[in-house]
Amino acid sequence: MKKRNKVGRLFVLPSLFGVLGFYLIPFGDVARRSFLNAVGNEFAGLENYRQVLGNQAFRLAAGNTARFVLVCLPLLLALSLGIAVLIQNQRRKNLLKSAYLVPLAIPAASVVLLWNVVFDNGGLLNGLLSHFHLKGKNWMETDAAFGVLVFSYIWKNLGYDVILWLAGLQGISKSIYEAARVDGAGTWKCFTRITLPNLRPVAFTIVILSFLNSFKVFREAYLVAGNYPQERIYLLQHVFNNWFHELSVDKMAAGSVLLCMVLILFVLMLQRSWERD
Image 1 (cartoon, rainbow, N blue to C red):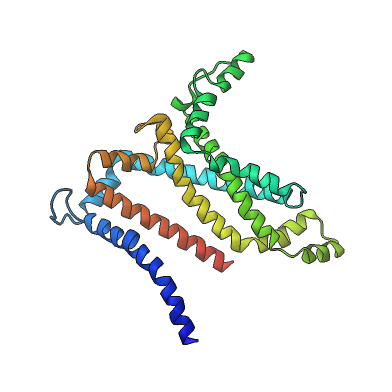
Image 2: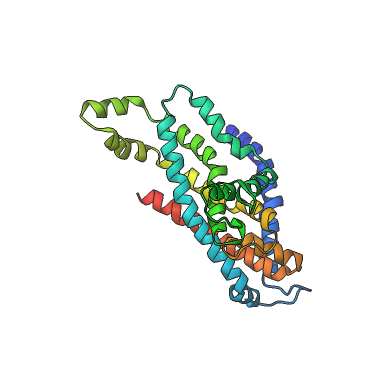
């Protein structure tokens, strides 16, 4: 048994060294730099954090990012779970799964082209509105840009979450449903009393992955609108990107540490909630 454990540790060592070399050690250096001046190694204490938290652009971006996550996550989870439940017993399930994964395989540059085709001044949406004698607008330069960003995120990640939900649904024994139906349970009761409780383990993974994927939507927003997009879609990644151009290493380091702390806190709170229930 001890020999088997030693062999297992040897297999883990390359991954451990990779995580240390490419993630933990560099982040430790970032945390160190967050307490130093941008130029030189002079200790600045919490001054960098005060500047970041007092920065109007950072507060705007943090609020937009939080609002985006709070809107997108529930919508994505509910839609993907509903679709997974509907198609789990379909004969052409594999074909449907492949179709839902198509948006995930489309490069970000192609998604941006799709945005321009649909939402530009002369795009398909404005053309459709003009057909019904309605006035169109440049959707990416108005408050509607936030809705476009939400739509893009859900469209691109929906299929991925559907596949994950289907994997969880396939792990639930059909005999449980059959026994429940014999006892007189209907479709809704089977869903709430059997499906949802048995999906809890996979649900935790899906929530975490969906939350992390929400930060990748910046690519589309940046390619469409550049460094300074419409105010409602100005995200944290825009702030960090602009600070990078300005070589504000101190602000980037402090902001990165703050963001990492929020992410860790979110995951820990979510894990604690799952374990409590």
